[in-house]
Image (cartoon, rainbow, N blue to C red; front, side, top):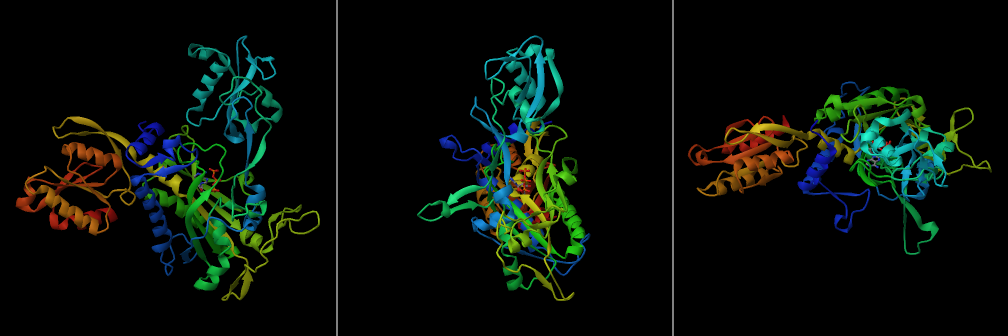
Amino acid sequence: MTRSMEKIVALCKRRGFIFQNSEIYGGQNGFWDYGPLGTELKRNVRDAWYHDMISAHNELIKPDGAPSNYQMVGVETALIMHPQVWKCSGHYDLFHDMMVDCRETKARHRLDQVRIRKVSFEGESVEQEDGSRLDSVYVSTMSDEDFEAELTSEALRAFGKKKKYADRLQWDGDATTLDRIPESDFNIVVGPGATKAGTLTSPREFNLMMKTVIGALGTDDDAAFLRPETAQGIFVNFKNVVDSCRVKLPFGICQVGKSFRNEITPRNFTFRSREFEQMEIEFFCRPDQSAGWYTYWRDRRYEWYQKLGISADRLILRDHHAEELAHYSVGTADIEYAFPFLDDGEFGELEGVAHRGDFDLRSHMEGKLARDAAGELAVEQNEHGQPRHRGSGKDLSYFDDQARERFIPHVIEPSAGADRATLAFLCEAYEEDEQPDDKGNMQSRTVMKFHPRLAPIKAAVFPLIKKEGMPEKAAEIFGELKAAGLSCQYEQQGAIGKRYRRQDEIGTPYCITVDGDTASDGTVTLRDRDSTEQIRVKVADVVQEISERLNS
Ligand code: ATP
């Protein structure tokens, strides 16, 4: 396996894809900065999504697998919204993770992310916080990658034993996570990085929304939240869009933008960050057609990643079990990718596709909904029999003028993360192989096999040597490619083989070399990144040839 997270993270820093945020000050945990190449890559991911879902969507034609033709429009809404939005959406009451603190290490962990396993070691014991000793404890790790090995080294550390004694550890049951054992067992858990057992606190709720203050007074009444998802900006504008844009059901409103979540343990590079970007579609349809639309979007979004180069072996569509579904959801599926930081057979979420029924529009009309005793969604009431969180009171229903019916549309929500998708494309692209150098000797190379649409740099132009008019000719071609809107690089330094390697490492699909023959026959070499095959192309045809290849 050549793909390892370590190598990918190192390449991202070395070549300017992704940097730790505020690195010169020691970094800000959970925040990342994109360098010049990462910016291009992520922009291409976003643009591919917007192009394929919205700009290039033809509303007059029924796509394969869709119940009918449909319209798609975009919005761009503010990061901060009226606090009542989050009360009605459920984020204020429900958007939290369970966490525990460790009294010894002072670290805070998300309950479901602490991996644990029970273990003992022939006659040895581990100290508890109160000074007593235990023969059998749970050891723990926060690691996702190779967590079994991590648990072994944690167990040896807890019992003060060297690596060579690993086979004398006596395991009791399989590894699990901290949320799966009763709280009464926490006193025998050695927390991640701790030396004693029983230092973890009781689990507590932790709201993931980031608070901020609006205006100069800074009182509690001025508190607001940075949006934890872009979706609510779409729901609260549903009526504005219907009234202003002549859209008819079924149609989708889409938005790309930043979201913020106060993740307890940001980790796995950009996978779990505190600031990230989402690409969300809220697709509004008739309730009686929502099941068909759910299947359509689920399958369409699953295919989208594959069309951009994610191998089907590393991508799964996982339908949620009934008990996993959010309280409003009729069906949800996750599109998941086998990120290299996960163990074999494990997958991490790239996108969720959820059938949300009429939950969101109704909540913003009537007040926050919850299931009542009969299991029906109804406005949640306080002790005075009034809505617990009041809705806007505005009519967000839709009038279907063909069926002469008024109803609240149902919603299908494909919700993707731009940073997670970018990370998956980075991981998928990474390859190491062997290619012959100028003298025919095999040399190992690192190559980022990005789909040409996503590659940050589409072509590089080189003069073979820095004389005989070659730099001037190469600069001319470079100028033409730029004028055609293609991101490209010009490089004249170093041996040609080295220049190819440098471009392979950033995933440039094509390299163009001006050489001794260019002046006499008017051709240049065009080298393909993946096959390393070289052909000769007329200078006059270079821009067209590259453009055609990129679009094929
Ligand atoms: P997870 O279970 O991984 O926390 P989620 O189910 O809470 O994710 P959603 O609320 O469905 O995620 O958000 C939609 C998408 O937004 C996710 O599929 C993911 O791509 C992205 N996303 C969510 N949280 C983060 C994060 N902390 N960092 C980066 N991307 C995120």
